[in-house]
Length: 327
Image (cartoon, rainbow, N blue to C red; front, side, top):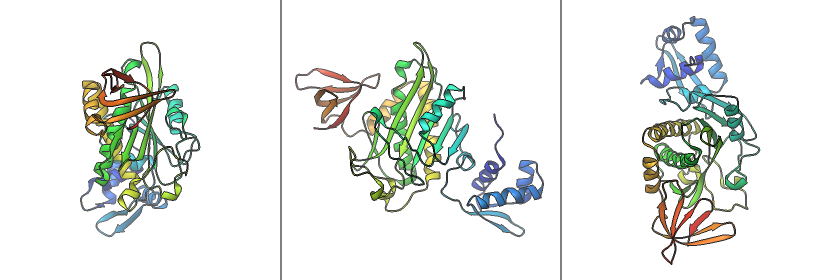
């Protein structure tokens, strides 16, 4: 395993210390460097926006962390088995999914997380644009290499949706819900979207990229006027900004736990958790499948993740792509 960077180790020490004080001697011993080198790392952290005070006879104290996404800050104290083994943070990019796919094609190990502060070509399902203004939201893509058949890869979309809902709950206390196939809602408004992409051969998956966009601190005036569906952000729902760093760390830990469950137990626990978060099951819906409109009662998910809709004639329709709305 790659040795943590000095800044990651220092931030991790701060997070593990109940009173917030970490002595220079402790940092020196942990990193195997001189006290002068410790001071230089502390100075670099201050220049990056961390408010760190030096208290005589007590050590260094982290007063406040900036709400910026850096690999060291995200990884500090992160308790994950796979996810976040490497974190790449970009000031701006075309698309985190495109970047993660490039890493996947180059042989990068699974667990890589690509985060961007801003995207110029963020995309959602069916080629739709995902608005990605700077410094307010989370745009992340996670590289996985599960030993599954390509047919089973779409099941990971439901894993992402459950993880986002759980991260929202743990970081804000808000109750998010899911909408098939890849939306997360707050009070009926879209707060997150998911886009998974895959490289595969006939009988094996090379890699899967979990693309996740969450509206964290977006203001109402930052949303485009011509949205297909009403949108919101966690800040709008809470009435105050939320920490992007805290949310990101929570999300990665939720994904890691669900991914381990998926590998060990299959899709059943993920589907069960997803259906508990869905309000449309048992209700009348309309599903727009391009040129075909299906109406009926949502009956849940099939074993492969298809949407099950029972029509008025009693026929059970399987839907693999489309937009579902209450009837």
